[in-house]
Amino acid sequence: MIEIRSREAVTWLILNRPERRNAIDRKMIDALNAGIEKAIASSDCRCLVISGAKGHFSAGRDLSSAGPAKDLPGYLDRDDAWTHIFKLLGQTKKPTVAVVEGYAVAGGFTLAMACDFVLAERGAKFGALEMRNRFPASINTPILAKIAGPRVGLELAMTGSIFSAERLHAVGLINHLASGRDQLVGLAEEFVGRLAALDADAVAMTKELHRAAMTMPLANALDMGKFANAFLAASGRIGEAEKRYQEK
Image (cartoon, rainbow, N blue to C red):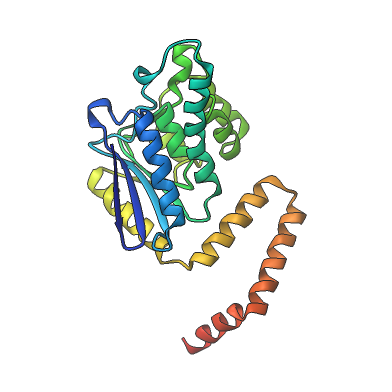
C-alpha cells in the first residue's frame, strides 16, 4: 500500500490505495513510519518525497478501519503510531516534499502540511474535514498553528471547508503550483533534484537553524547563526568556498 522508489538520492513514498483515494489505514501508517525511518537513516537519501497514486494525494485516515468503542488503549496505540509520522517529519534534517494532486483532506491534509515543502497541481483540494463529522482535526491543528498565521490557521482547522491550491499558495502554505499532472511531475523532478544536489551538512544546519528561529527570540537565533559560521570557518569549509569562488 506504500510504494517506495529510490533514485538519484531521492526516496519517494507513494500512497497507493487508489480504490479508497489513498485513505490511510493502520497498515499504511506502519509502512509510512518504516519508510520514513529508513529514508532518514540512509546515507544514500538526501530528500524524501511523499505523493499519492492515481490522481489523488490522500482522502485522510480510513475511518472504516477504526476499532470498537471504549477501547482507549487500542486508540492510543493507533494514534501514537499516527503522530509518530509527524514527529519524524518534524525532526529529520533531510528536506521533505509533498507532491499533491486531487484531494489532500483530513489526515491527507495533515500529511502534506507536515512536509517542509508542498508542490501542488492547481486543481488540488485541501481541507480539515474532520469538523464536518463533529470532531476536531486534532493532529493537523497544532501543525497549522506552527506554519500558518493565527487567523488563517484557525480558519483552516475549524471551518471544515475545502480550500483550493490557489488559496493555500496565496497564504504561503504551498511553495509552487503546476498546471496539470505532466507539469507537476516535471516541477517535482526539478525541485527535488535541486534539493538532493545540495550539500547534506549545509541542508541539515539550515533546517536546524530555521526550526530554532521559529521558537526563540531573534537575538538567540542570530547567536546560533554566529556560532555556526564560526565553526564552519574553523573547519576550513568557508575558506574552501572562497577558493572555489576565486577559481571561477
